[in-house]
Structures are given as structure tokens and as C-alpha cells.
Amino acid sequence: MPTQGTILVVDDSRNDVELLLRMFAQVGVQNPVDVCHGGDEALEYLQRHKDKLPAIMLLDLKMPRRDGFWVLNKVKANPLLRDIVVIVLSTSSDLGEIQLAYDLGSNSFLTKPVNLSEFKAMISAFHNFWVISNQPAPKRGRWIKKPGAEDAE
Image (cartoon, rainbow, N blue to C red; front, side):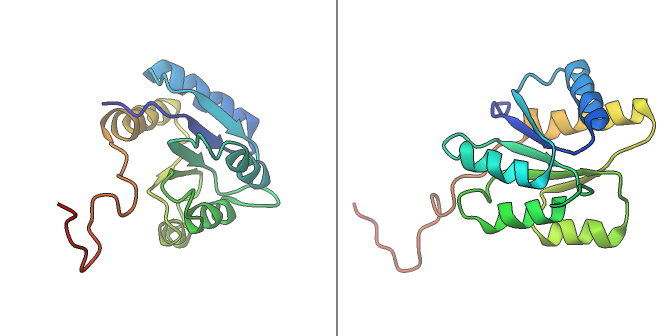
């Protein structure tokens, strides 16, 4: 069952966003897509939409003022936001930045290829795994009994 939720793209480059949206159309992404052009805007968006959060956030790291690491840290530290799947989509291939993104709670790290056909293949793989095949995790604690908890039956 595909993920039906909104995909939130957080990237300050309008050209990168336009390219990403074109690739979404070409590979068949049918989810609603919202775009924020910076870290502050992304957090404001999440506050405004706290009753209907996005299922997936594609997050650029290199943004002015509030970078992607700041956004990632804020999202994963907030109990109301931490279940959003955050995928870093960056031009960086620096191992330190990749490790930091995972340490802060990123679900995946994708490096933007320069080649257009490789970019399309990467977006197709993202779509097939994170949108079509992946199932959202159950809410924390929903399926796991607390230690010492007795059945009510």
C-alpha cells in the first residue's frame, strides 16, 4: 500500500525544486507536494500543519540562516514530529555530514547526482521504496506493552 501523505520538500534552490518536481511527475509520484525554501519556513509549516503532518520530508542541508541539520535536529527532537520520515537530499557526499545526518535521526541520505538520468533513477528508487513499498511505523508504544503491564482481559 503506497504512502498517501504529503511530501514536504525543504530546499532553498528554486532550480533544484523545479527539477525535483519535474522528476516526480516523470516517475509517477502522485502524492501532494509542498515546498519550503528554508529552515525557518519548514518549521513554521510544520507548526501550521500539526494536525496533518507530511509523511516524508526531503531535506537539503546547505541553506542560508537555518540549515538542514538545524531542521533535522528540531524535527527529531520533537515528539510530535519525530515520526516524519526525513530523507536528506543534498549535493554533499562528505562522510562527516552523512554521519551527522544519521546521528540526528535522518532515515536516509541521498546525494544529488549531477547527471540528469542518474537523478531521475534516484528519484524513481526513492519513490519505489519510500512511497510505494515503505509502511509507516506504528505510533510509539502502540504495539509494545510496557514492562509489568497486565492484560486487561
